[in-house]
Image 1 (cartoon, rainbow, N blue to C red):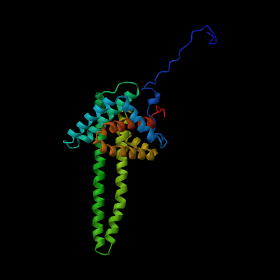
Image 2 (tube, rainbow, N blue to C red):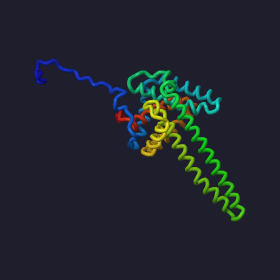
Image 3 (cartoon, rainbow, N blue to C red):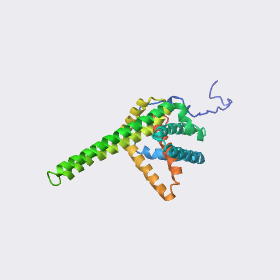
Length: 262
C-alpha cells in the first residue's frame, strides 16, 4: 500500500531495548576511551544505586558480613571476593536491562562461573604473595648492601638504601595497579563473557594499558569518596561501595562492549 495514502491508519514504530545477548553486548577487545569517562563511570554507578538503593544497601551489608566472617579462614576472602564480584556484575547487568536487582545476585557468580572465578582469586592471591616475597627480598638486600657500604664510606649506606627504595616503591605501585585492574575487570570478563582465566587476565592488563590515565583518575576519585565516609562514621560506605561496584560494571561496559551510550 502506498505510504502516502491519507486514509491509511497511522503506524506506531516501537523501539525495543537491545537484547542483552545481542551483538552490542558481545565481547570486543578493550577499547581506548576518553579520560573523562572516569567521571561518567562514577555517575553511572550512582545512577544504578539510585535505581534500587535499599537492595544495594542490603547487598553491601551482606557482602561485608561474608568478608568479615570468611577472614577467619585463611585465604577464604581472596577466593570469595571474585566470586561475589562476578555475581554483582551479573546483577548490575540485569538492572541495566530493566530487570530487578535482588540479593540473590550476590551469589550468582557461584552458579555462573564459580570455578573460574575461584581460580582467578587463587591466581591473584599467588601473584600478591610472590610480589610480596620479591619485595621483601629486595628490601633486605638493599638494607644488607647499605650496611656493607656504610662500613667503607660515610653516607654510602644511606645512598644504597635510598636507591633501593626508589626501585621498590614504583614496583609496589605497579603491582597494586595491576592487581586492581585484574580484580576490577576479571570478574565481569569471566561472569559476563565466559572468558578463561588466562584470557581475562590478559585482557584486563590490555585494558589497563589502553586506559591507564582514566583508571588512575577513577581510582583517585573513588578513594577520596571512601575517605570522606570517615565523616559519616563509615555509614557512607553503604552508598560509596555500591557506587564503586556499579561504576566498575559501567567501565567494563564502556571498554569491552559496544553497548555504552556515552
